[in-house]
Picture 1 (tube, rainbow, N blue to C red):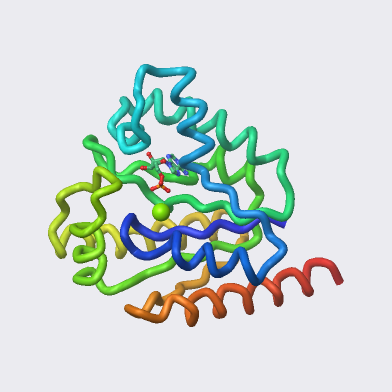
Picture 2 (cartoon, helix red, strand yellow):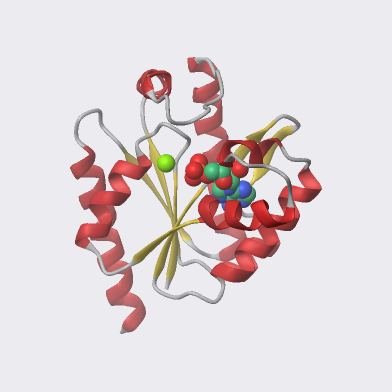
Amino acid sequence: MRVVISGIPGVGKSTILDLVSKKSDYRIINFGSLMFDIAKKETSINSRDDMRKLDIETQKHIQRLTSNELGTMNNIIIDTHMSIKSPSGYFPGLPEWVLHELNVSSFFLIESKPEEIKKRRDSDKTRSRDSDTVEDIREHQEINRYYAAAYSVYSGATVNFICNQEGNPEIAADNIVMRLDYATETTTK
Ligand code: AMP
Ligand code: MG
């Protein structure tokens, strides 16, 4: 089984996934890391935060190569994005050919208050985050719900919205693990 866990940059996804990985047998694979390994061979970029600024055809090409690789792995949680904010607009993280390749059972969207995301982004010096306003962040989270619904209709996979409350990532992680356990039980029966 494969599931997708997403959340916009700064939502606290990495923290939650660290907790999930301790409580679950699923292997967590970061789409962006795999894609960056491929991008380093195929393009001249040397920062993962430059991938979303590549021209869309190049992004699609390396996105496809990444999904081909992921399509061979089983029992994984794919850490990725519903949409990526590129200079030419929102770019789907899971266009039809990626969905087809990955054949996921469930989508999880981690969400948080836009004000908290903004605060986390401003204090993260390790990444080159976009200088989005609170309103931009609100829009991106809202758009991602539409993308998730579209992916669900296309693939038949379920969608789960997970709230990351400030200071309580364990609650979100436990919620995800509970739903994963349920999905595993019902798929193996
Ligand atoms: P992350 O570290 O998870 O924020 O991902 C780093 C970068 O990987 C993103 O900014 C995107 O450029 C790229 N990326 C991740 N997932 C996808 C995807 N499903 N489709 C296209 N690009 C992706
Ligand atoms: Mg992260």
